[in-house]
Image (cartoon, rainbow, N blue to C red; front, side, top):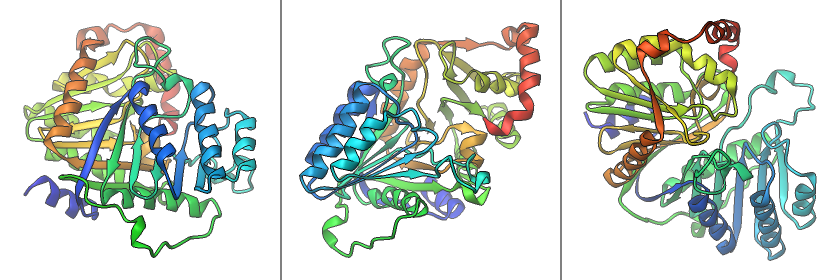
Length: 380
């Protein structure tokens, strides 16, 4: 059974065909492409993000959204109220006064306090219903540049054209409706994405409200499908015991398993500490673990064998699997896989391998912190 048939039967979502994928690495490639698509939009712009912080790039996006709204383009901006909390209020006011429809997802001040811990972690930009962007990048100064130092984060984002754009649009609409907006059905064929290439894409969107995520099933399926190698890049590594068992089993069966996550530069120290709970088991099975040393590693990419890739907003952790709304794309395309694997190899050159001997010799302070943080494992 091939990748496509196996994943369609397991996840229950069909692949779309004749798409194109452009891999964008780091801010120097990501932001110009996104800004260009916004500038060229003629009818609609839909933007959803978890992170919207501060910096010159944050100003540029808000100012361009405002400019396009004044030109008559319908601009919708959906911001997670927790992740985008640091955003300058003046930018929100600028967009609103210019005609941008700015909406906050799950406001922090609400009576349904049990929903406050469940966020939308998706990053989506759709222009004219024909070009979409998704991946790991947030709108903040930290993502600018080319990962040259600790001030420029390492991330990967993707430009999608073709029928798969409709699945990404559906993920935006899902959050837009939950935020209290009315559903608008566009019956015009002009908004439909046209054939753009030869890449097959499966769009997997998950909702935190159901307490079970297809991301878990997707990750399990990808690991089981591997015949040669499993390469993982993630900002936050905190898998459940089942995924650890699967990775361990596949490594013992001779599958090459390599994982890169943040090293000395990370924005969440607690997550780095809790990641260590599974290291000894993984290392003893032959899984190769690496700390990225150059800057914060924020990419979310899984590569299986020679043509299967999984990209999107979800990390390899409990929060992405159980608490947050996410969107991931599964891509069947040897060219995309080869490009991502090349980036992975370059990232390995800037990473430090964690050996089993070294891990067992870690100091007592780290061991104590692991025990203290363990009860909060499902929050990270």
